[in-house]
Image (cartoon, rainbow, N blue to C red; front, side, top):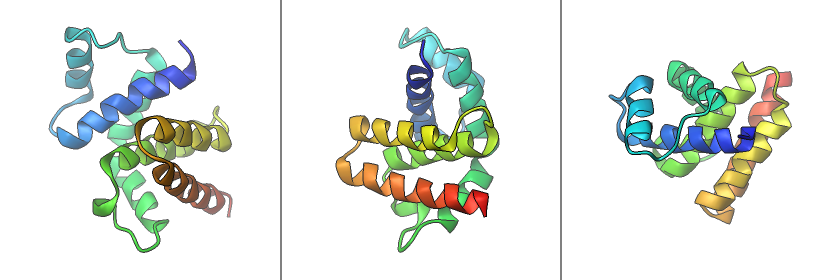
Amino acid sequence: MTRSEAREQAFVLVFEKIFNPELSVEDMKAIAQDSELFSLDPYAEKLIGAVCDNTETTDEIIASHLRKWTLQRIPKVSLALLRLAVTEILYFDDVPDSVCANEAVELAKKYAGEEDASFINGVLGSVIRGKTN
């Protein structure tokens, strides 16, 4: 499985977690496997764990880069993609920041809309620039 496919798996479960915050990572893995949706890739599992462990910090960073938006106004698909990408940018040093942003934009094009993809690209660009300063 490619990392892109693993990110997509992780996105599906991060999105699910928004609607079921009480679920643990283990619960989410069990649901995915029991329903035979997919067998979770190790990279996806690592990414989901990092998102769940760092949601508060990640959300603060996302919020600090929003202009005229709040986290509550962001569509859930976009929020899940931002959480995934920002987590990968901050905690996965082996992945270039530009790859994280591009992958999130591509998933937005698939699961959301063109405006969402542009919004995500703008927020992630700001996060990346802020990270290096």
